[in-house]
Amino acid sequence: MNIVIIEDEPLAAEKLVNYVTRFDANANIVKLCDKVADVIAFFQTEPEVDLIFSDIELLDGQVFSAFEEIDLPCPVIFTTSYNAFWTEAFDNQGIAYLLKPFTYKRFTNAMTNYESLKANLTQTKKLIQNQSEKRYKSRFLLKHANAVSILNVEDVVCIRAASGVLSAYDSAGNHHLLSGNSMTELEAELNPDHFFRLNRSDIVNIHFVTSFENYGKETLAVNVSHINEPLITSKTRTSEFKKWLAS
Image (tube, rainbow, N blue to C red; front, side, top):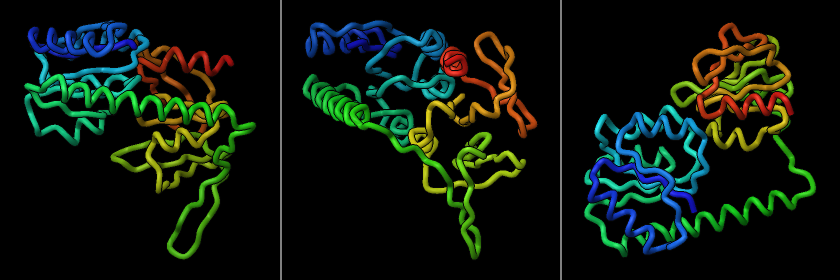
């Protein structure tokens, strides 16, 4: 199990390391971070991480500002002296919230919950893999005042999220409000051979990607037909996007 510890208090970090190795002697602490900048830089390397322990207030700001810049690869157990960040924690893949000073018993309870979650996810993945054919979403039902219209998924150029609202842009240049799904739920319903999530807010249809070019050091500007502005890949998804296009 590969673990990252994000903690700016040396004694607290040492305590966590001791708890981790006491719970699982084979656990691998792959990185200790104490700054927002360090967190961003490390996760831009796309490391293989199974679990993150994270304090909230770091030397150069709150860890949430780092999490906004990356795609978290795994669950997070938050360890903090503040009880005011529950909502933000669970909006950022938090599965436990340990208030300092916490005991080894509280730590083991959190780890037991993590292992149960991991086991359930593994079982779900196996069930999906054993299905002979997964049925992906083929159409959206769009509700209007007195009617319901149909938008075929194959006509969707991209799906964008803004302020919690999802919109589908079609090949006729129109956009339609979608309801009933989060971005993550919708991503799972779309065929990954045709749709790719470029960042936290944009999913693109491969059939409408016309070109891409370097935008920053580790990001791309993706040009899509029927959309006036390019869509920007997140730093942690740029490499995967290139592989997806070439597959």
